[in-house]
Structures are given as C-alpha cells and as structure tokens.
Amino acid sequence: MMLNVHPNTRIFIHTGVVDMRKGFGGLSAVVREQFGSDPTDGSLFIFVNRRRDRMKLLHFTDGGFWLYY
Image 1 (cartoon, helix red, strand yellow):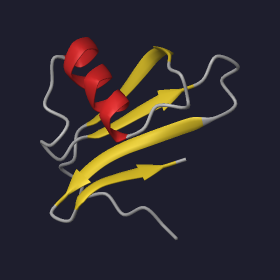
Image 2 (image 1 turned 180 degrees about the vertical axis):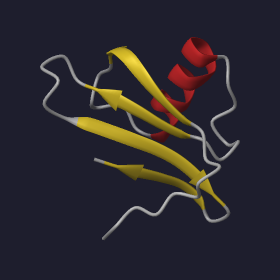
Image 3 (image 1 turned 30 degrees about the vertical axis):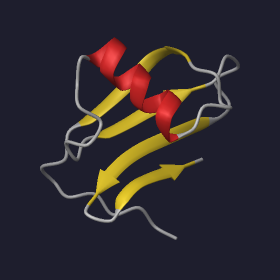
Image 4 (image 1 turned 45 degrees about the vertical axis):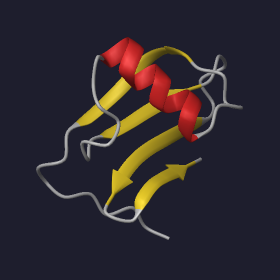
C-alpha cells in the first residue's frame, strides 16, 4: 500500500518521544496538546518512539482516521 498525500497537505513531525501503544485517541490528544491543532483538519502527523526506529502517522480523511505504523 502506498500513502498518497495531496500536495497541499500540511505535515507535522512530533520531535518528542511518543508511546507507540497509543492509538487514535491518544495520538489525537497529543496533536491537540502539543501542536494546538485539530487532528481532523486533514494534516498528517508523524510520531516516533524513544529509539527512533519506529514511527506512526496519523491522518484524517473523509473516511475517518488512518493510522500507519
């Protein structure tokens, strides 16, 4: 599967460490608290773990949230 992102999509990278056990709700809370953004605005949010060897992407589209790992 390939992730296709519209050229106007804003991409945010969370530079702090995030617990990779977090799902939609937990990562949405990080977006609201750390970025001061609405996780449903269509932006792409990238999170990394402590060792920086894994990442999760949170993206909201018309169909709802997508969580890529």
